[in-house]
Length: 179
Image 1: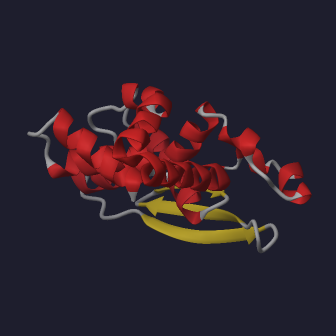
Image 2 (image 1 turned 30 degrees about the horizontal axis):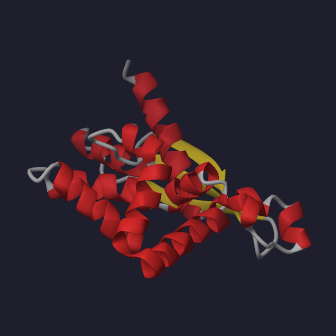
């Protein structure tokens, strides 16, 4: 994918001594669907979409899944039309805020929770789907995460989002208990 190529090149040229784990976390933060959707919002790509009336009415112009896909498609088209420099120009223009805020140890909450759990000899967090609601074309998942005596749950329109939010909630719980 064009986006992955651009980000990998940027991260490698930025810090040739960075370890693979750090670069992988940074790459994942910049290429995930939410990052693409944020860039699409900055580029105002949602205003150019042709959507069904139902999708438009349901907020399709601001859905991460749609905006993320559109953003990647635009980058692919720019690459095919103008080569890597055109795609890189788009990337640097619309990912600027995300690049500025990219921490050196950017870890998602699930990774942070796993590292915390292992450092406290608690084993790995366990994730369970405890509920599912909504229509088949847009289900909402409720996920619970358990770790020792702690647990948290969260909802999301993808299992990954719900797991991430549940992990974040559990991290807050354990950090408050350990303060």
